Image 1 (cartoon, rainbow, N blue to C red):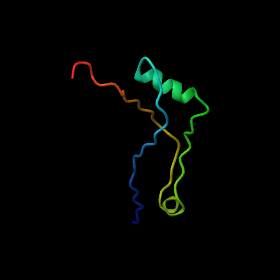
Image 2: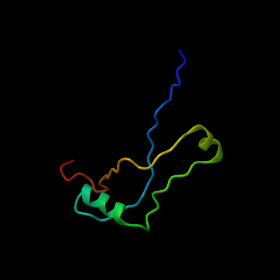
Image 3: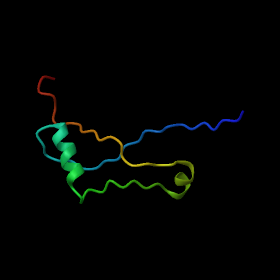
Image 4: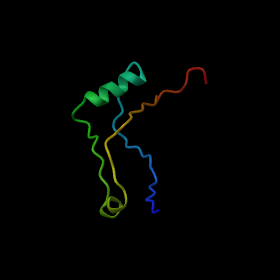
Length: 69
């Protein structure tokens, strides 16, 4: 039997820095803002090697230092 084997690659793209009350609120703000470009494009060579889909998960990270640390 013959098999095709693929490697699943995870990547990220900077979307925006926003003010919000929580990580969930920050993600909601970015998802609702049509002016934020969520489109991802690859160069010609990479586009021949990698198949891309849409963003399947959003993550937010605080830019403030941990008050306890």
